[in-house]
Image (cartoon, rainbow, N blue to C red; front, side, top):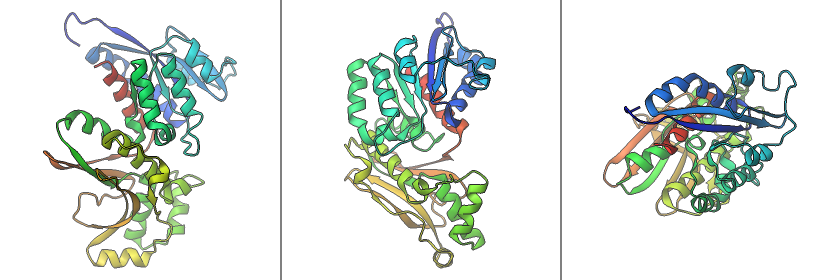
Amino acid sequence: MRAGEKIKTVRISIVGFGHVGSGVAEVVMRKHDEILRKHGLDLRIVGIADLKGAIIDEGGLSRDEIARFGADGALLDMSSLELIREIEHEVMVEATPTNVTNGEPGLTHIITALNSNRHVVTSNKGPLALEYRKLMELAERKGRELRFEATVGGAMPLISLIRENLAGNGITAIRGILNGTCNYILTRMTNENLPYEHVLREAQEIGIAESDPSKDVEGIDTAVKLVILANSVFGMDATYRDVRVQGITEITPDALKLARDAGYAIKLIGDVDIDGRLEVAPRLVPVSDPLNVGGTLNVATIRADLAGDITVIGKGAGPIEAASAILSDIIAIYS
């Protein structure tokens, strides 16, 4: 913070208080003093809402109040839409689960917040995968920001890197691993010659895969992220239905061994380029290629006309990782 610079109070609501929403509350509290010192922003969470109800304090909720959310029954009978409309705040964080069928309830939350003159930061992929242009046009009309770094690559700074650090470049293609669950499964199958069903069951037991893993292993999650990149980077008007998708459920240990013996790994790769290519499928990746990362890591190679190929690697999932991206977006709104 520069000498003489005034402190700006930024009031935040969090809608959806699962892993990501609670992670946002945690990092805002943990980083409050540092952000105040560095950026002159006094971040205050003034409201939280989910299906259980809401808690409100227009002066800023305390850490103890947030920790008790839903535990002691002291919740207001207030819907998330009422919180968005009626409680004065500058930024609404939308962290409800992704729904790629109709985008709800996140789509209505975002539209309501923008119409209520709130900035929006979201980790929810569904609304952007289905109604990207409509939402961005609404944000522009209202003079508000809609930011969504956390929707693609978790903590990996992909969208902001392209928009800011590579602003003078023409981006021609993005290719990468955008789902940590699939990457974990393929890595374990390759390294230990294990069948798909065994590794999937193990991944579910340790919390890397959901009890219903279909969105991950069938390539749906990667496809949705690819649509967001297609629209935000290449100016397309794509939806999930425009992506050719193949998952990893048919990959066998024998196929992985044959690939390894030939100097390749099999990875679930998402491809999008300036010519409109939108594909998700298992691909052969040379073992020496930067895209050959293991475990739950995400990776993306950005092809730029001036900078050449730039590869970004990071944690693609996790509540604190997603919250990191959300916090960066909030700060960027006021930079």
